[in-house]
Image 1 (cartoon, one colour):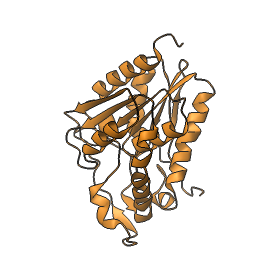
Image 2 (cartoon, rainbow, N blue to C red; image 1 turned 90 degrees about the horizontal axis):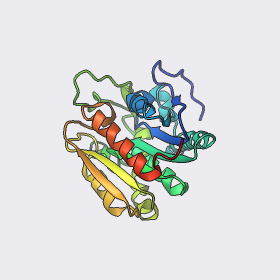
Image 3 (tube, helix red, strand yellow; image 1 turned 45 degrees about the horizontal axis):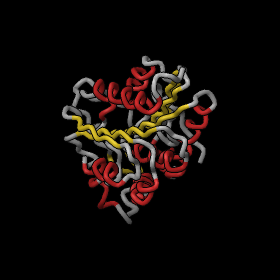
Image 4 (cartoon, rainbow, N blue to C red; image 1 turned 180 degrees about the vertical axis):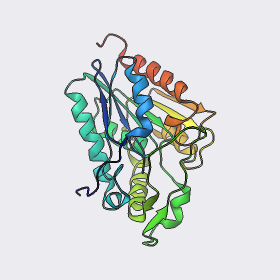
Length: 252
């Protein structure tokens, strides 16, 4: 699928070159790298190499998203991983919402990934359940991003294609089966109040993943898009601590 529309200003992928520890970040459904940009900037300050690809069909126009498959979203993240591998000896993958779901698949495919960090990863979206098996409406109105912080602004689409919703639902439906086969360490952040993805999604992932080392952190002052919300500094510090636990400070 070729995209037909230009990338929205501010929604571009980003890469901060640092040391040999790479952190690959995935934004979520209908989001863009802008939603994880501050998180990437803060992790860069610890010296890490940080990359956030723009998932196919995102950050342009929802007409582009309508033609995308979940495999193409995964391929966008996978290409970022392969780029980071060229300069980094240790890679961890971090994902917000659907990005967390994709992070699980990446760790399932590439066993050398040193750790997964998920932020409100998606396995179910109750608001979309009634759309299963339906073809109309072609586009749904997208509400205001679920962010508690008053001054946050997220670049997103005004409308969501129902075909893209179905792709997301398929991705979420097939993910639980791979959890027992993932064994790398995992850190899960879950907002206590999330109006998009129930917090039980993260609980389920942490409980069923095959990893020996797993940790759950509850965010008390953020909604769904926690990468842009009030607990962002808690997330940054938790990520840094987790990375250091997995790879130590000996990698430069």
